[in-house]
Length: 259
Ligand code: ARG
Image (cartoon, rainbow, N blue to C red; front, side, top):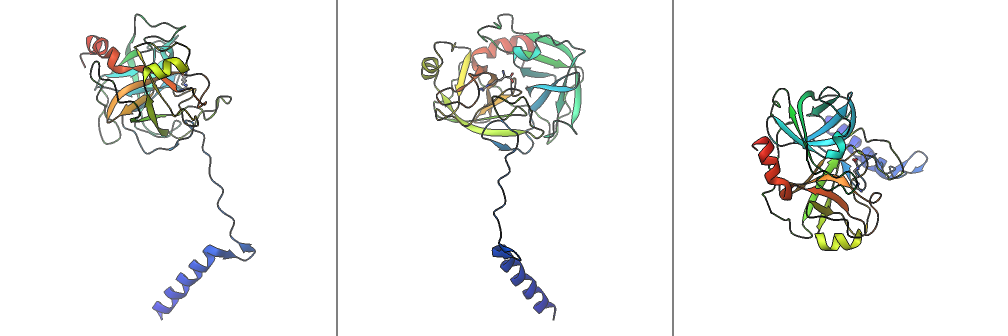
């Protein structure tokens, strides 16, 4: 008896996939989440932080040790140790996780606001990050280590999903994009790429970081190679995203943090 009931239920369920009372089942509309452009909603990324100003998301940041996070210098502009905090351990920008106070902000002394050269800042937390499955650091690229052109890089954040919309994503997004070599990128971006920058993004466009992703991680083979810095619009053809080159600034990071 039970078997028959189960069989009937299964048959009904199978039949239901093709048809319904009013005809063929409409395809489920593809959900287009607010996002990093061209990416998808991500599981927890333990090194990803939300940098907050008065507890409102303004940028991404990255855990590099128990006491230190790295972000972009353009993200700390105007910020103070009392206005900025870091949210760790949640994929939802609006709930969960643990909020950390900041005791030191160290902007790169040669950061150039106009060219975005040396777009890096270090943030020291008041109490160490409580490491667990949801919260832990990512190793930094070694000094002078350049990722191979075309290798897969993952960028993540809560930034906006289009150049023209300021709306942030509620849930963490990520996308995998190819590393572009500096000379190609420099040609595409009219000579604006310095040795302290790194480019990534398909030349066909469609996948990129965008506003609100600044300061966030670009990871290649498990190492932090880039920090979201700037771009010409977002996800445009022949216009890769530009990242702070961590390996070029690796010794400065070590000199400040000991990491
Ligand atoms: N400046 C932006 C921010 O701070 C990041 C822009 C990145 N743009 C890009 N096309 N990859 O949020």
